[in-house]
Each structure stands twice: as structure tokens, then as C-alpha cells.
Length: 351
Image 1 (cartoon, rainbow, N blue to C red):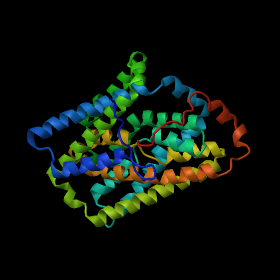
Image 2 (tube, helix red, strand yellow; image 1 turned 60 degrees about the vertical axis):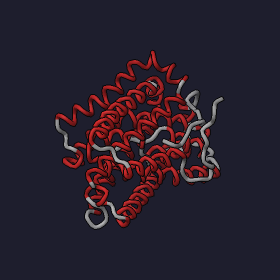
Image 3 (tube, rainbow, N blue to C red; image 1 turned 120 degrees about the vertical axis):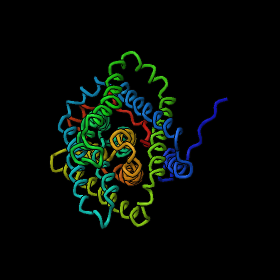
Image 4 (cartoon, rainbow, N blue to C red; image 1 turned 30 degrees about the horizontal axis):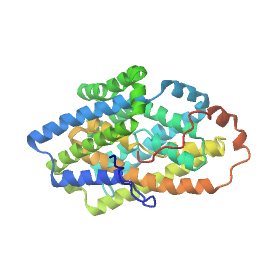
């Protein structure tokens, strides 16, 4: 007999997977991998990262992405929010060192600003708020695709030695652990796409299990190296406050900036949710490659920001859903052109 995995009540501001992430961090704190076990965990984590990016490549429909180019102004706006405005705010956080953030936490805060946007949660919140769902799908896909190249390059440029620098070794790691598996997935999509669609629930567990392994490996290395002695409750509170300001700024800039650019309500909703969020699923594997043994503190700001953005955007999406539609939104030709079989509100928020 098949058993359903129990779900948490819908009124809770987090889901079971976020609790699993917290439990993984606790496990790494209590039982960190050492010696041979650490080598095995590191090797398994490397393989998990390659598998994740292979699956990302195999799932991304090139045809859908090209079709979404019809709404290029919206996608450029989201990309500008993700890879221009966010990094500028991340650089500004350097002024918080050393009084508010430690250099290590600030490096993680800056890295958070460099990772691509989400796909699933952007679509889900856009759908709840009655926004342009097809545009959110394409915007998230473009951001994820661009992030495979842009995020490591920005990390090399802005993080310097903190992120490992742009050495030949780091370049090879990025190419072989991220880019090659992604391209392989794109090339094999024709043959494996149907299989992935039929088994998406099982492969979703593989996705999440791989990320949990990456988190355990990174935090184990941090425990063994003793880096967690640098994170006091006061520093953690300061980090949360800085991230709250960051999220508030991006939600405000993406919404009112899109209005200034002349976008209709449906498009502004897609821009706000796709342009203000960061992907935990893409960021954690990238951090393990870019930061190596120093990944534990680097991913902490991203994990906290991910939880915060889900809670805040859930409230905003429900509020937007109660707002009256603009009379011109129904007749917006960009929305009409983008709508069609891509629109699928039945998506999950957990990534």
C-alpha cells in the first residue's frame, strides 16, 4: 500500500522541506563528517551537484524559452533586477563590515545577491496574485540559464579571494560541475525529457535529497574548521535585519520601477516576484563549487533569505489577489501573446 507523505498545515509559514534543511544543519552540527567520511561526503556532494545541473538542463524547454522572447522587455527587467540591482545592493553591504556583519557573513550576503531567481515559487506567487504566469515561467527560466554563467563570473569579479578567486582550478570546477552537466541535459532532453516528466515526483525527491547532501557536507566542513564560533546570536540577528531591508528594497524597486517603465498590473506582478527572489536550489550547489571548504558560512545568508522571501511573498501574493484588476490588463497584447499552454498555476512554492 502506498502512503502519502504527511504535509504540514497550510497556515504554517514554512514547509516540511525547510524543516528538513534545518534538521540537516543540526545533524552536521552534532555529527559532522570527519576523515574518510568527510572525503566520501565531499565526493558524493560533487556528484550530486553535477546531477542537479544535468536535471536542470534536461527540464528546461528551449522552445518555451525562445517563445518567451516575445516579451523581451519584461525579461530584461527581471534580469536587471537579479544581476545588476541585487549585486549593487550586495556591494553596498560592505559598509556593514565589521560593525554589523563579519567579513565572512558579508561575503555570503554578497553571494546571495548574485544567484539567479527562482522558477517554481515565482510562478506560484504570480499565479496566486493573478499575474502574468507565462511571463513568470520564462523569466525564471532565463534567470536560471543566465545564472549558470553569470553567477560564477560575478562571484569571481566581486568576491575575489573570498570566493576562491578566478583561478584555473575554480574555472575547471565551474565548467565540469555546472556547465557540462547542464549542456548534457539540454542535448539529451529529446530522449530523457519524457522520462523526467513521467517521474517528476521521484526526481523531485532526488533534487531535494541532493541539496540536503550539499548542505550537510558544507556545514560539516564548517563545524570541523570551527567557523561557527564566528556567528554569535547578535551577528545572526544583524544578518536577518540586513536581509529584511534587502528584500523590502527589491520588492519596492521591482514593483514601482516596473510601473515607471509602463508595465501593466499582470506584468508588474511577474516582475516583482521573479525579480525580488533568489534560488536556494541553484545557489547551494554553486556555493559548494565556488567557496569549497568555506561554503558553510557562505550559504547561511541564502538559506535565511529563502525562508524570509517565501513568508513575505506569500502575504503579498494574497493581498494582490484581492486587488481589482486594471481595466487595460485584460487587453494587454503582451499578456495575450504570452498566455497559452504554458500557464499552469498548479506549482509548488518550496524552491
